Image 1 (cartoon, rainbow, N blue to C red):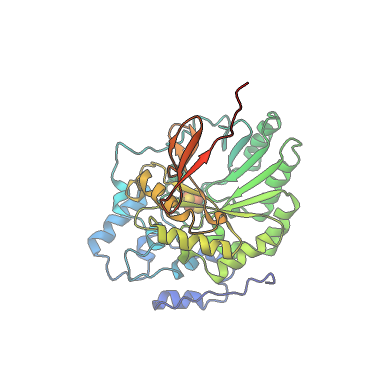
Image 2: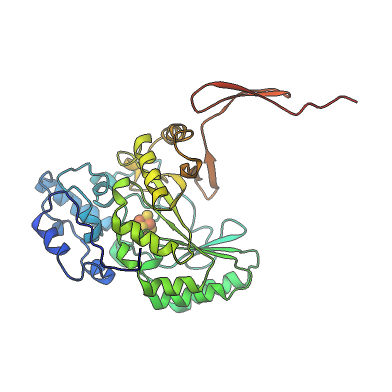
Amino acid sequence: MKETTQLIDIPAKSLDAWLKNKICDPRWNEWEWQISQRITRIGQMPPLSWLTKTKESELKNVCERFPMAITPYYLSLMNLDDPDDPLLKQALPSTQEMLSEATSFEDPLNEEANSPINGLTHRYPDRVLFVVTNSCAVYCRHCTRKRLWGKGREKILTKTEIQGGLDYIMRHPEVKDVLVSGGDPLLLPTSLIDYLLQGIRKIPHVEIIRICTRVPVVMPQRIDRHLLDVIEKYGPVWLNTQFNHPNEITEKSAASCDLVLRRGIPVSNQTVLLKGINDSPEIIKKLNRQLLKIKVRPYYLFQCDPVTGTEHLRTNISTGIQIMDCLRGYISGLGVPQFVVDLPGGGGKVPLQPQYIVSQTEDRIIFRNYEGKLFVHNEPFVRKP
Ligand code: SF4
């Protein structure tokens, strides 16, 4: 596939006049245009037949606390006639975000407490998280860093602040891996991404850079030649993205991943398990099969963090384990991600999987396989002296 920004995905669903008009705009494939045309107020949404006036005014209040942003591209993938559309539910505010539950927290992973310097979290010994902006192309309703959205006031670290983070990493030779995140770091101007990556790459003990971004999913137009020229210079760089539903894999998003891969930048996917959106084995299996087809490795299936304003999207841990049980044996191991829960309070990630050991003695272990059949494994025979 050659590098082009001319692909336009026109979904088969019926589109309202507002959206048709946008799709025909000659600037549709320019990411700056996609950003400028984002829907940031409920009143800007195309008509939603199922949304009552009362509900609409309630949603306006939600946006006061948790802002919204939806790119025309991402909107074009939704079935707006269906209030349960899995993409719409990820992007449209819900009144349930205002319920404050005792089981959720502003910063459940304690990132602020583990932040020695503005924008930088240092929790694991060998890696740091560098949060360079709070802004995103689409504000995902399930976001772990909702607390940073700042009522829609979008912030980007200044060069001085970035330098502060670089100085910290320089002083810590144990840091081998820098995870650049946000918000979405690929919303930074390309020249600032260049400045940031160059600064990181100059630190001799940093081995890899990882970029955490959702732009291939919600605004693939951002993956252009100029950006890739910059990222490619500072390899090894890994790119982690977040496809949560098969409907997000389109010709355009697949092409953007392909452009990244062709520059020698591996692309992995981190799905968030979301109630009523993708919490079934069939959906996750279909998603992972499609990801493999576009050469994106399903890396993590995340238990949704207990963040204030996301409780309605969280599933029980057992749902995730059951999904994992339905994947193993029914899709190539390449398509089986690690199901992980990020422990509250900054305890780090813990992998979870179904129990395959039925019983265990010193000599033998009885396993169950993916079909529920039992098999005996003998431990090595140790001859007594
Ligand atoms: S793109 Fe990432 S950081 Fe931004 S709102 Fe979505 S989940 Fe949060």
